[in-house]
Image (tube, rainbow, N blue to C red; front, side):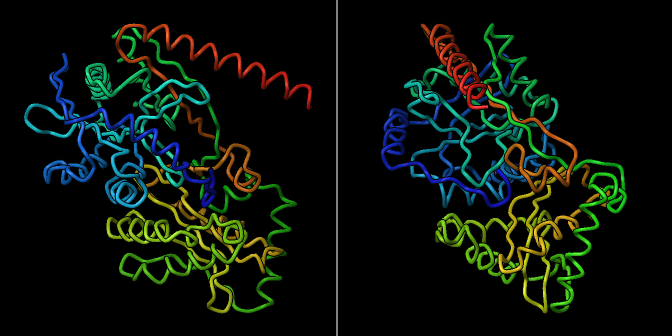
Length: 408
């Protein structure tokens, strides 16, 4: 899903069913596993001051960076976008209270199109990675104690389904090892590939190496043509700058385009507007906001938001003035964005794009695989239920492939 592409929110019927399943939970439970860790399930609005403070530190010590799980992003997401009672946070700590890992969870009444209740990591339509924050080196223990706790929780049924994990990452390997130690499968049930920016080259060298000469020439021509209309200026929000005017400009720019007409722009929904305001301000205060704009005579015609979680970064939103679409302002600001290659702290940027995205795939040559995985939870018949779900998924995939071959 590339910067700014959203989908409709869940229906009220779906949310009501999900809340009914979660309603079986009456109070938090704690489970001590063989790893000597404790897992508790807590309401997002009832986290202790100690956990909230350690959350910030954990993000910098996590096995894998994920801006979408950091406090400045996830807390406003939960406050503004989660339905009451729909989400709980699994908190894994040592006996001394050290925060080892955390993951927001929800219960869904169906597994894809299969009417099987399952526990999932909670992410929303503007959150593009689901990897939890887990202290580096403790990935296996985190998943072991979480699975143990879910096995004992009466409200946790069927399967654990984790969405949007980086393939071959430390967190996924920890889950696979934990499941294997419990004698359970851990199947990758879906895979997508999206563009990634990662290179030792400087920005200009990368541009010349990865973008065809003919396309570079055309973009230079368009930039020159745009310059004939007025003064062009690129700018990046500085650490001491006020972020509020930039956020307002972005919301206006996006809403004035096709997303506004379709009702999918953030500015079309007061909650989503507030979400961007709070999230961007939090990222800016934390020194993790990378915000660019392309101005024509002082008016923004393209804007781009990245969130940084060293050593990685995430391309979050992009918007441009469609009146100037013929000059490719979105591509021009992406060219300016390549300056991140000169950063000593950031090794890569995840595009957060849909697979085969026509624009970003033509500019960034590296790719990152993102997967969904499923693990059966404990209890009588869990293994049989898991195998039945996997068989249904396999059959559906085969049917889609046959249909694609016929249509092709």
